[in-house]
Image (cartoon, rainbow, N blue to C red; front, top):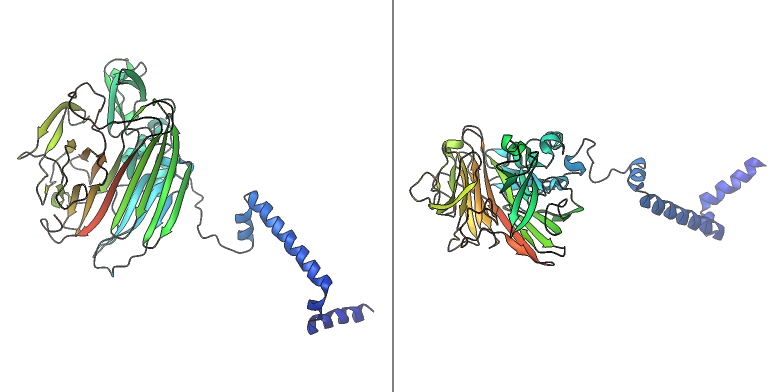
Length: 439
């Protein structure tokens, strides 16, 4: 009897009669509804990725299990090489939403050289091991030593009276005291005794994690925007701030845009900068040339601190003169200087700086696309294979008493609801000799 019953069922499947049964369709509909309900429930619980993996589907992005800087996954914008290997191209940019949107690395294709890192930075894994948020990185200062750190709500240094304990300084803005953390590298006996002057360096966003980071694919590259609801920066700043950083990568250009908005109820000073550390290949420093859009630099008290005296000096004919059309050789120079009163060329879209490496056959142009950018800080210690050019809206130590009352040190005052924009473009261009290439 069992065999006859099974034979009848099998016969219905063979003839397709089961498809015409209303009972069968009702059963299938119920199964589909139950399955959809389970999937929705599992997605809400965050298990959909697990379900896909168990069903044999591979997710489009593999999440690395190793610790990530700031506890958030890095975002890597990538694009395919398309110029048949005859001209330099950007290939990728690695950003750290967990560390203030630090641009950790930029990879480029260089004819005859292949894929080359443009920034002085360790691997992502080594960066994660260094960016601990404790001890020497308690204020995020490790970010200043690798890749390109975003600086908000000021760029460079702010000095003030050292407070007892040596961990804070008291700066003065319009008669209002602002207490800022001292970077570990800036410590010393004066701070520990509560006397003298110390500095807070690189702003207050260095160790902040993004509230959101939204990458998108573009026709020739990609774009990502990180949003930081920074508030009052842990009570250090007069009002509350929202920061949006957008990075757009394509073959020949990379645009970095930073918008800071006062979302609090009090006025606040605001400055923005970006500190990329461009790599110089070993043995090529003497061949690298530097071009800067300024004939004026801020005199410093000493080469080590880089703090200004308040005097602005002409650079024409000095070792600090990099303003000619073809620039000047970096050679063994040690630079830690801020160039101000930036000039825009007749055919330029903004003040331009250039680093040219004829041995590698390429140059990098840094163009300030926002008129609020008033200074470029250059840091190139002798004997090191890197050079940093920081386009910043403010001078170093912008609240300092050393400045003349007539000198605009670049700190913008944002009223509640107001915002300011900082935008810079990186460009790759080919060169075939020390004095050749776009001028």
